Length: 74
Image (cartoon, rainbow, N blue to C red; front, side):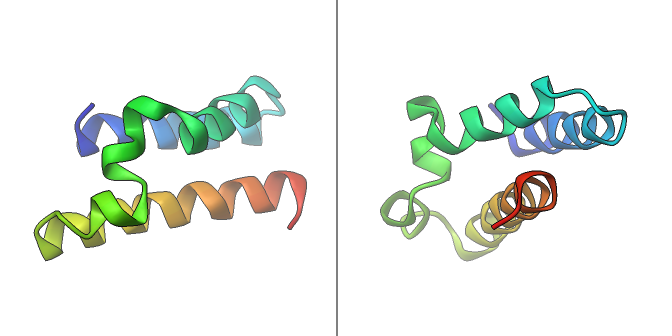
């Protein structure tokens, strides 16, 4: 899954969440645990990426965390 596709999905989930759709929460949590995304989410895997790409992925995961915190609290 490319970063642009993931960002588009993140925007869609954020909009769903604003509309009160609980499925968005489940989708976001799933992304935090999905083994298929470990290569662009886990710290060891991210450390192997070029710096610019690593920073992009880290920003995306920070946004996922932010959205979930806004939804369910810390």
